[in-house]
Every structure is written in structure tokens, then in C-alpha cells.
Length: 54
Image (cartoon, rainbow, N blue to C red; front, top):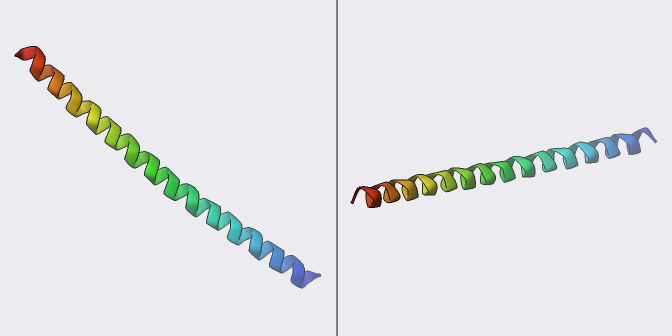
């Protein structure tokens, strides 16, 4: 029984660690996408400003 509980606890911990790792990777991808979007908005605005000056 103790051995089974220990195994279940280890499996639960491994599952949690795996989920945390996946969440971390997903968050990094979301952050990169947001930064890219902000960069594109900046470039777009710079382009618009140049057109307005023309």
C-alpha cells in the first residue's frame, strides 16, 4: 500500500512538472507572438507617419 501510494505520488508530481513545463513553453510562445505583434504595429505606424508627411 505504501509502495503504491509512493508511486502514485511520484506519478502525480511528474505529471504536474510536465504540465508546468508545457505551460511555460506556451507562455514563452505567447510572449514572442505578442512582441512580434507590437513590432509590426510599430513598423506600420512608422510607415503611416511617413505617408502623412509626404
